[in-house]
Length: 328
Image 1 (spheres, one colour):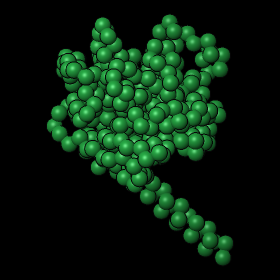
Image 2: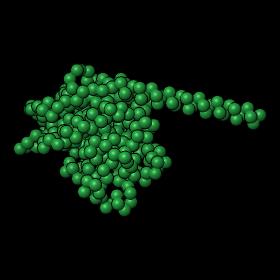
Image 3: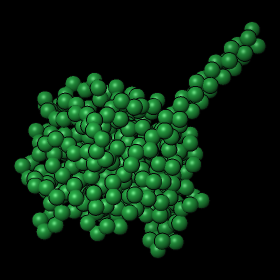
């Protein structure tokens, strides 16, 4: 009897492993087939030459967590804090850096707002913290829902850099108070999914508020109706539906361009030095297209060298804090 039970358990385990590996292989095959083009600096700058630009951009950090720097950057490529003369005392003492889980809010002169990523819900933050603790991360600290920081009547649009839970599970709270907004996605983000984004896509499709707007055109910089100065670039690389937002902000004497790149890198040094994420992460945790991510990081580095363009990724709390962008 014991032998039969053991045999059945081994067969079940083999089936589970085979299914998981097939899912992983399929996800890698799909993401590796996606390699969209990116616009040059002049095209990005020219797209902001119009009336009615937004007047401000701010971020709200829904959660924080300390993690080892080596979980964010490939150790073999990482120049390190000391090498780039930006010695972080906290890093030297603890070996940890702090991740952020932000949402961004773009506001126009008439008060209209567009939200880019909605961050964590409390339940998702707790679940994420439990999983990441297995890899040695510190406790996660949930700071609150983005929806609680905003006037729902002013939120007229929502979009996502990609559909992982830490970027979109805060969306459920936006269905309070009969909120009316446009949910903006590229056709690719809406239609193409792996096992890591199917659940999020289903949740969005079942939201009991908001209207969907699919950007189904051939433009590299995709404009969004009723939101002048805000554009979407379909990028792939991190997930099948990963997209980058470009926001041109009228700051009075000048127009400043903000590029919100989600998880194209997990630490800003990934952009600054074009350093990839740890190989195990890109291979086994989140199947990524390494060639496309290299191209995107190169592009982000080039953009960030322009004096009137600033690049932001999601998970580097220190960079966000030091950027000068307003925190909600």
